Image 1 (cartoon, rainbow, N blue to C red):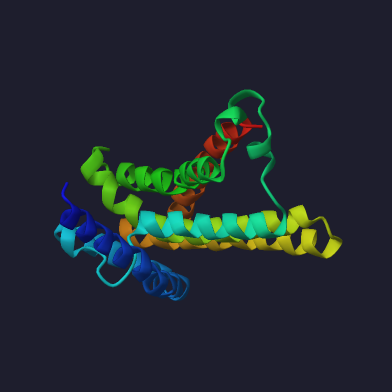
Image 2 (image 1 turned 120 degrees about the vertical axis):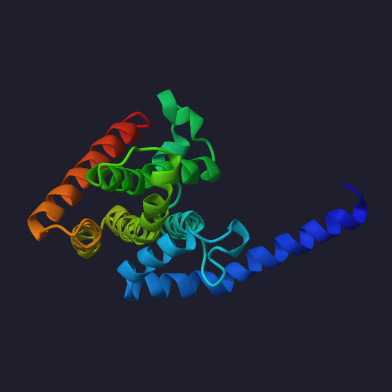
Length: 222
């Protein structure tokens, strides 16, 4: 790579990173106000050419990653390093930096999109492969990012240790799960054209599977 090619690459990288300052809040607002429409928007974008996708928003996985980085920054500022970063026991020794912890968390929170997407594909009686799983996974990353922010904020409040912060943090976590569960029920109901009870069953099953796997993986690093 010659010097001018390097400059061009840096130019593109700088523009991309700085554009996040514009598109992250825009994407967050749209997900908060119209979560189901944003999930539908992601489905439509998956049908476009790769260089034409998500031109006016952040891509769902990137949105999830940046949301976790923001929560991690708030955690460092308010309560300090997570215990798993400090600990050198067992698998926690693999998580020695903030970058490692963020990567671990994006894997954990990505369990929600992948479990929801898998349940949707199976409910449609389709074969689970890279093509059928991609669109629902991407759309789920939008709402999983908001869930990650709500739960991350709840954990920070609980870690502060005050009576009021523990109460608010617990309430925030409960609200996050209720919001996410209600949204998933509506999502299954919309895409499967089934009744609310059946949609609730699909959403609950995928949510329980996600939490079980998330708990098991998290326990390996404690």
